[in-house]
Image (tube, rainbow, N blue to C red; front, side):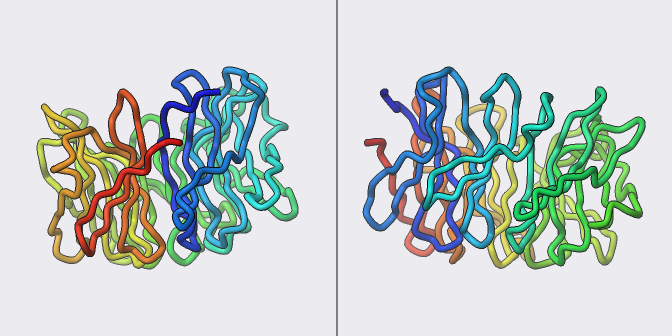
Length: 314
């Protein structure tokens, strides 16, 4: 097989591996890139079928990688131990859509989107015991993009109608709507009571990056730009957010924003290729990302030296 591209990097908590997606545009599989040995190792293999394994996410303890897969004519969440290489379907009992997920900080649980009876609910899955249950459901709402708050006590999410930011206790109780904006994507800080939100104050407004404070209940526009902000990712210390910005013309760029000062740094301006899907190193000193839409490859930017390195496919 020919693996002509690589994308969607996710940095391992121990800092020595990148989980990446490799394929040819028709099918894709999960690979590991060893940052110390500078070599790739294949992790998943679906025997040449036109299925896709994609969006790998390391567990916080570094023991597992969860990812999405279109095998078996449905979208499911799989988990794999990178040492053993044996994938396990976590959502095989649901023949419909199981999508975006988020790991708990102890690496034991996953919250995720799951389609049932014509709408999408948020489910809670225990990786060790296999217990899987509905965390939150609403008769008129379909929920998406769940994330754990910094203390693990709540789960925050948006809706497919993009009508506000929502929160629920980790027990599934006390469902509340936090905002009335046109909220699209929520990303919870790992260290602070902040939520990075892709949002519009009204439907015809521009999509900016906003900051919601769960303690003060304040909502602040961080970017207020004509560009379209996408895919916010928190730094490990919760002090910065990396995202990619889509201007009216020209390539997309990876932007790093300091949460306290609101200062921004464009780390891919010199690249002149569209960049997306940032991932932080566990030290917070490097950012991996995908560049080039036509033939994507993974790059790494060093925030200390400003060095930019391409990880070339083998």
